[in-house]
Amino acid sequence: QVQLVESGGGSVQPGGSLKLTCSASGYTFSAYAMNWYRQSPGKERELIADISSGDGRKKNYADSVKDRFFISRNNAKNTVYLEMVRLKPDDTATYFCQNPAYPSNWGPGTQVIVSS
Image (tube, rainbow, N blue to C red):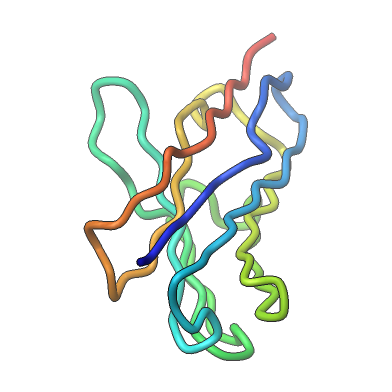
């Protein structure tokens, strides 16, 4: 059974940083790519970053977060991370990780609030 649990969210001021963690279980973590999404109230869920399987060499970012957000993975810990720097109020959202091979499996998400 695929399970995903996000953590690390919080409230920060504009310009601040956070590092989100997604812990995965129920499948061979290293064999699958992983995605990070976010959803703001009243908006659709948005794919913001993805990382390839294995060594995670291939990474892609949405234009809205490029050069500010950085995705990485630790296969030994079955974990994918999203490091976020220079946060803006528009980054306020609930953040979710996803294994794209199991698109209907979502964790509870972790909330990020960027406000002065």
